[in-house]
Image (cartoon, rainbow over the protein chains, first blue to last red):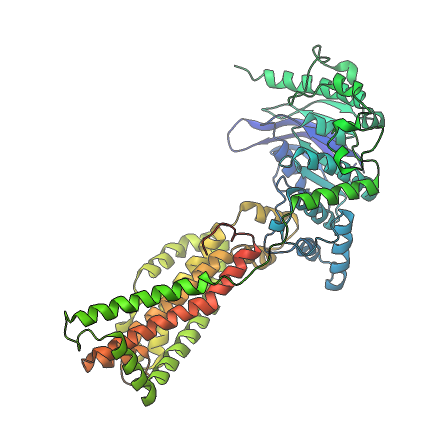
Length: 241
Length: 344
């Protein structure tokens, strides 16, 4: 198990807990979608798994080499070209200069941007930037890849394509992926498992398995989407005054 | 790991549409209608299992590559060619000509005595005279050399200090107000002190230049660092950057626009301080600079020398901006996509 969360809790200062008693096991090579409405502490949970923040209670087990992280905005460095952005990740990982260039080109090819390597981030479209960002997080060469709503700011056409792209890359690289989203359809489209987090405090309230049939049969997928949406809304309704 | 599935769902599940009005039942019956998908227009429409967003939307690796490259070319701007924009050269020249004409017109009205307000031609004549005496070249060279050397040393001192202050919070809290204060203090105020300490030597001039330039470069760098989007540091942390790598590979390049602003101001301050020092401290082993020329003009009550010196000091400032800082800044901003829509 690359990631084990046991009774994880987090509160900032004296405020109400953001996360409370979060339990989850994530298997090697699994694609888990973490779903929840605003204020459910999705991003906080991801930060804890990434080691960017410390939990206030409970225990967690994560890979010793840490995790790769992909953010909602591509967060590419504007002073570097697409290739240099990837090369920087390799450099900070300690990859030698000679090897860096070839490896960066390989990663650019993987995200279908082999010919756009010399472009600056501002010359790329939103979808292309996110793909460079994905390549950069793959350059970190960590088994665990954490993604914080990486496609939330993209247009629908691009997002649909990137879903296919991410699924393909996940299968090719065998990464363990934890994908945070507030989009039910996205969670069903991508995850092998969908974990629903409640809001204030965040807690895993229910989980669903998504089978291969859901990937090919829109009827089944739609049904599951409906079920999860209903459960999510029930969670949101609890907070009505 | 047991997973709860469909049976454990909420009672009102079946009719629930997702937030964007998508209805699962419609989509299920509408399968196999490629004309309803956005992909149809690309001509690569896959046949059977197309259900927007809910399931796989492309029919294989090659199809995906093709779709993506189509979308990429639709979403990227076509390359624009950069041509020489003549208005950039002609407009400033025209403005200069107008100003000189106004000056000449005022002088020819004869409101003031000619030796108090010399005309443009008198000043140009005086410059020619100074050139033939070799004074113009000498003073210009002396000042420029000192200004540039003093500025470069200031940069070498201020950059590491600025980075250190920006990155280490206690240091910043301790010395930040002092550095800001030093920037407000006119560096001319240091001239008397410098003369007492160093006498009439080059050390006096350089000391004053440093006191003018260093605080302003440090401040520029710090404000540049303050304006870095916090996301960049987080990315750096996630990518595993050490403290030094973070400072050199991420913070410094990210702060470059602000840093360059600080450098520009630092140059302006060192040039001003230099002139002030040269005007006040004359004699000893201090060489003959533009400030000294200006002071000489005042002593001799020769207004055309004074005007010539003022124009030369101004000219050097404009030239450095046009030839050094302007192009660097423009390149920097363009490469980061920050130039679009500006009036530069």
